[in-house]
Amino acid sequence: MIADLTTPALFILFIATAAIVVAASIRATGLADVIADRTRMGEAMAGGIVLGAATSLSGIVVSVTAASQGDASFAVSNAVGGIAAQTLFLALADLFYRGPNLEHAAAEPANLFQTVLLIGFLSLPVAAMAGPDVSAWGVHPVSVVLAVAYVGGVRLTAWMRDQPMWRPVRTSDTRADEPEDEDEAGRPWHRQAAAFAGLVAIMGTAGWVISQIGTTVIGRFGLSSSMVGALGTAVVTSLPELVTTLTAVRRGALQLAVGGIIGGNTFDTLFLVFSDVAYRDGSIYHAAGREDLFWLATGLVMTVILLAGLILRQREGPARIGVESVLMMVVYAIAVTVEITFRGA
Image (cartoon, rainbow, N blue to C red; front, side, top):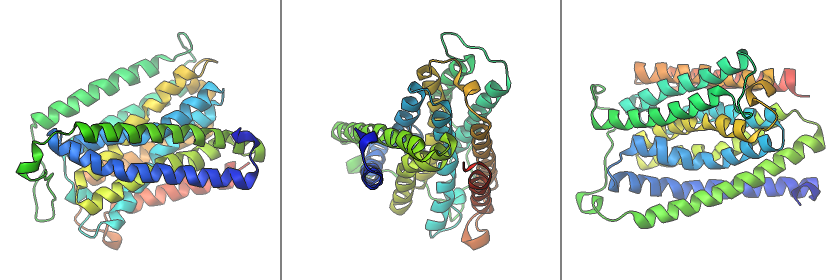
């Protein structure tokens, strides 16, 4: 049905679907903050697990749908392109935040640990692409390792939050994770959780529509799957992360903002696991192209820069933001230029 739409109608549907995703994500951010406080989960954990997974759902649907239809490059580029775009969004949030460098103000050990995990998770697909083409029932061993490592990483992050062995230095610019008032903190949260689940379902449905639009655009205009995935669907399905991050910053929930991006990116590595299972012509890592590896490397470099910024905790840099934010924007701009200039056709 979507494939039969005229080109103007196709783009109108694309914009409308993106708007639905954005609207749902705005509401989801407020609910996640309430759930974090009332369950005593904390903003960093809620941002990294609850909100990060929810806002990633539309992207998962895009990658899995593309993989099931045999387009490995579309599936992989949508996953890794989204990680690069979402890391950029954290730099944009730094511009939006009127206080000191966001990475300084939102100091939280759980975010540091999840960034380290993310670097490791991004390294595994690189090893799979460079290694031998092996699979069992069409699934590469790296996908199994990645899934197990993610579960273990989440448990370690929770343990680290409950029993921290060190804490960041508190300064006058550091914003702590502040829960609701005491008379609100113990109230029931099940209604908020049900509403949150409904919004997740909406974002998942929107992801399926976006995947069909992307497939149609690739076939109709002869564009590369890598370009449409990394710069088209990846950016659109990542808009919830941008919206939730800016909304969280405006609410003063800085750990939720930073944790949402880092946790969302960590969860996004599972796109590759789900896509590998959905792709039935062997290992998806070896079916993907060099363009997809390029975006994987871009996301990895940007994550390393982010980790350096989280450790350095610069109070203020160029344009009143951290130097890491400037570098992340530069790296992403270079990657987009390379994609458009050298691989646009």
